[in-house]
Each structure stands twice: as structure tokens, then as C-alpha cells.
Image (tube, rainbow, N blue to C red; front, side, top):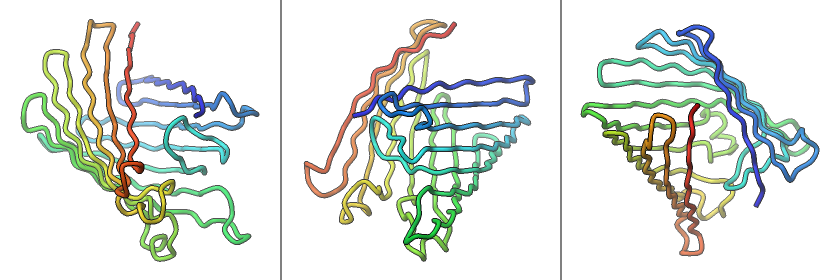
Length: 226
């Protein structure tokens, strides 16, 4: 595999405005231009939030696990909180890198919707759906962009449990398995102190063909805050 190092920063000049930035670098790939970058800004008006983002992924950038589609993307998103329910929606324009039959690949239009419900103390249920434009689907371009995700979060007294499933197609799998990809994940985190937290996670990916088509990985993370 490859080793990828990323740096994430957040700056909040005023309470209602924040900027975020992320830079990821494949340490085994040279030159240093082989990287991924993301910049974003968020306006927070209490129950209403508005955001914008710009992403750029070099064609030769490869993460340690999974696949990624290189290119450039710009997008906007918004969320509205109505009591215990939060509604989310977003739209973006993505320009993949490379060419198709000697011609430039046309851009993709991406839309997403989501809902978050927290009717019990410490419990949150989320559901999201993402789909490319109808024109892109009709032309057979990147059907792997359609995916659905459902997750459940539960937390109490410094401990938090996260469980979720996501299904959709994956371009890295075989053609027979692209319509049957299922990903399940679970994670447990605990706040050791106001300055430290630990997280243990597990993820299983099933492409629906056989036992050889399943992959799994475990994650352990220690976070220190200063």
C-alpha cells in the first residue's frame, strides 16, 4: 500500500464564519504535486448553515486504502434545523481528469440530500443519498456516484457508539459486483480526559461475489487536544 499524510486546519475569525483546509500527500509518490487538497468555508446562522468547498485531486494520487477519482470539484451545501430534525442538501460540479476517446471528459453534476433525527437524548440517526445528474446516468458515466448511507450514533457520559451501512457501486470492483457493494462499519470512542480521547473502529466491505470479494480493516486512534 501507500502511505498518505494529511494536515487539516480550521480557522474561525468570527463566531458565524469558519474556514477549513486539508492537504494530503502520498509520501511514496514524487513530485510533491501528487496530492489532494480541499478548501471550504461555512456560514453559521444558528439553525441555518451555508457552506462552499473546492477540491482538487491529482491524477496520480492514491490513498492507502480504497479508490479515489481524481479531478477538481466545487460545491455548495446548506442545512436547516427544525426542532429535533435537521435537513441537508448539496450540489456540486466535478470535472474528472483525463480524456474519453480523445475528447475532454464532460463535467458531472452531483446532488445530495440528507436528514438527521435526534429525538432521544444522546441518540442521532442520519440518512444520506447522493446521485449524479440524469444526463450523466443516461450517458453511462460514473454510475458509482449513486450511493446511500444510514448511520446511528449513541453517546453518554464521555462514550460514543457509531454504527452505519452504505451501499452503492464501486469502480474498483468487477462489473458483476458493482451493483452489490455493501459497506458496514462500527466504532467506539471514549473521552479519557478533557485533553485525550481514544477510538476503535472496524469496517467490512462486501462486493457480493464470494468470501474473496470481502475486505475488512480495523482502526485505532488516539487524539490529544492542547
